[in-house]
Image 1 (cartoon, rainbow, N blue to C red):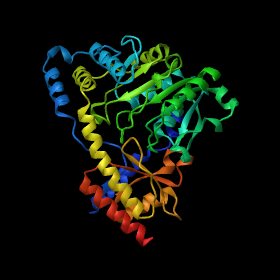
Image 2: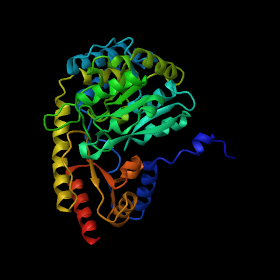
Image 3: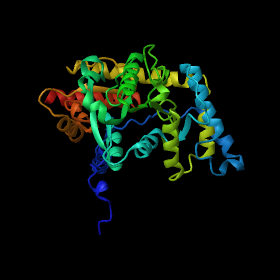
Length: 389
């Protein structure tokens, strides 16, 4: 009996699930597989956050349901973080909402604001979950091309006025997954101007906001005057604080958009476990020294991988953010064929660029989320594979 809905049946399989299935098969057959695919930090959660979790978990009252929007302590910590880092004032009661990770929040936002056949503009290349959520909500995707000649900034001028006029929501993601592209505040200023002109909303996915290098600091959408009138920004503690499994994030900004999302969430979940929220509040109120230590580790890995790729003839400019390397596949290969053969022949997983959209074809993504010695082994195998081609 096939009980799943047509939308579920027509949803393409999540690429990382397929890769993990093949990874498991190869390991069972005795292959040593090095996974540079999924962006899951290998570094430990800072001890002070764990200590806070343990302390709060020992308080019996914290084992009750959380308020639907998140506890006051967490929401105030998010507001204080935005004030201290970006100079942005937020009302913690109306302009901040706790999430069970930003992935959940983005997916629920789309169902909260879309009617059937409404159109959402997504970046191309872009995080696959955006399109999956739009599909499951009965919406339609249209595409905002990212300009490879300008560090994968949005090419707003490539989109016609007619397309802008029909969209209800634009999704942005900087620092960007998968391209590692970064922007300065002027890009967000242009987006807000377009949103005002064409009457659409903006959701900026800032999951990698603190993961930056070389003195670069990622701006917030909400630093643009008037941004709260049209947009929201999603944040996550997963990457910067190595808290992927903790599932804690937030959305900030436009009160009406957040209210719509809170209605969906209050009918589907009861927020996150209170001790996790309170430990996350402790993280956001910290001096961020743990984040800087993490970034130093990732930057060392980044430099190592870029040097190795350049030696293979794969030229890559050093990005200013994320822990990804977005590189051209060698001549003569498609993204999928190169990634598949790399796994089958030398046991290294990279993500084919085409799974992130049509403009991802010709690229592959490396995640720097393995220890240095395993990363060294992985690039050594890649050199061997490329040289044999």
